[in-house]
Image 1 (cartoon, rainbow, N blue to C red):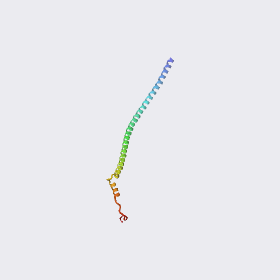
Image 2: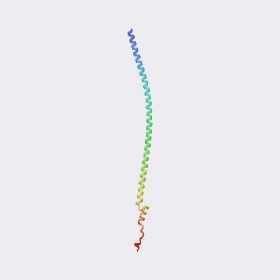
Image 3: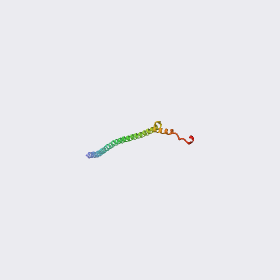
Image 4: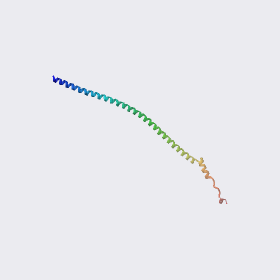
Length: 120
């Protein structure tokens, strides 16, 4: 009979040991579940921040593109103005009917006053 009680006691100890292990496993599973929940929350927050960053960077990119285009238009206008000014100046000096060309030709056509040696 003592042999049966020893076996029963041994079986009870094994059951208690398995019970402790199972409770430990359940506690660990609960901890993992809580950690996974926190990780999901952080991942959602990170995703939201990433979307906000993406929108902001798209706005900044568009703003910089417009600034760059505006600068190009201003530079083109300045260059076109300088080219037009040069063309106008060249035309003024090369067309015979213009004021500057007429005034230079008048100066060249003005006779010199006679000197005393030539009249005598």
